[in-house]
Amino acid sequence: MSAYANALEMARETPDSRNRYVDFLRAVSILVVVVGHWLMAAPQVVDDDIAFNHLLSTTDWTHYLTWILQVMPLFFLVGGYANAASWRSARLRGEPYGAWLRARLRRLVLPVLPLLTVWGIGAYVLFQSGLDPDLIRLGSQAALVPLWFLATYLAVVALTPVTLRAWERFGYKSLIVTAALAGLMDLLSLGFGFAAAGYLNYLFVWGTVHGVGYAWADSRLGGLTHRLILSAAGFLTAAALVVLGPYPVAMVGLDTETVTNSQPPKVTLIALALFQTGLALALEGPVRRWLARDRVWTPVVMVNGRIMTIYLWHMTAMVAMIGVSMLAGGVGLGVEVDSAMWWLTRPLWLAALAAVTLPFIAGFGRFERPREDRRPAPRVWRPVVAVVLFCAGLGFVAAAGVVDDDGLNGLVLSLPFIAAIAGGVGGARLWERANG
Image 1 (cartoon, rainbow, N blue to C red):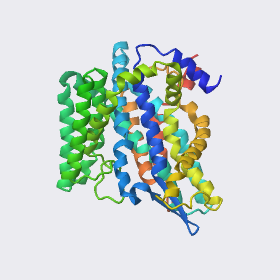
Image 2: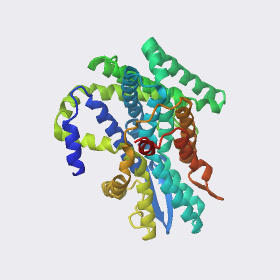
Image 3: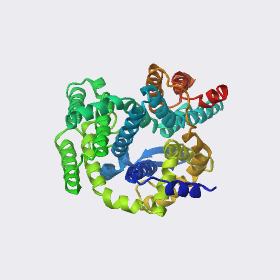
Image 4: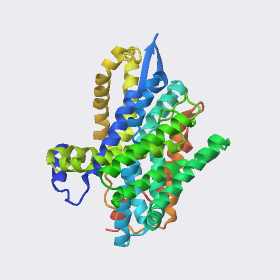
């Protein structure tokens, strides 16, 4: 059965009770991230030497595009909606927290292990062949930078029972508290120089946005008028923070800025989330009616079926294509960045990258749908320790790449695999065989 036929069958079996707009926003947000990464990357070959430019660093006007292209707030919004439904369902079934968290880890982390395996083996071979470690490090950092998001998301997911309980008991007061804490961390880090405090905002900022997803799940974001007001308030707040505060226009991290909005995240991203949430949910009604058509809903099902694979491998595909281009003498990379010709060739660039990504999706997509886990619930400490190790390993790899001047960063690369073993994330098939 073809991928489309399989997706069409799944689309037709979708229950009427499912909010298809959640899946639609998840698919759109990931595709925007992919296109944004590909568009902002601006490698250029000059005199047989490659410069790894970034469009945001070379072209100031593109900073305003990040108010639309920085869609991680929408993904955390959708995550809040989905995780609320998932944990509430587990509570009704009497499923323990340990089993629930292990199941979430299996869906989110198992697809990462093949990516790290490929990069670990590839980087080792390239290093032993004498390739400049700096090039390997740059390539692996570019390819694995999406892992920073996954590390943050895992921590937020693990805290869902606590944050959802706070939402159910205190409502919007719980979100006001986490937003205020995010503001306090900004004050401590930017105003008083306690830089370490800013890193707590990976939890406070994204936890607040995740909590807005709870409000959406509970139908507490009002109707069209309220959502448009929410969007306008978010936009004006973000604009005021940029104009009056120390925050830059670009809503993503830039090496050229002394202060960035995303590394670590700042309160500006909460305001951006409200702007994007109100705008996106203002369209919920008509788009949900549109998604009721099989021919519209089927592509959404297809993307969601391989969404982690698309996200994890799209930058590896770009690095691979750049590497092949360099072996061919830099073909296609000689156009001056931000020139008229550069922009005219962007559709071809994006189409080529999409074509290169497809084999990765076909080859590694199967890891995204692990078999049903019938094992008894683990002790709570196991998946919790796994989350800590996963977050540490993925964060380090995203920040530093997979090699240094001495060779492979073996300990950092091994942490996610150690986490998988410690948390019992893998092994479901072996358990089934052993227990009949």
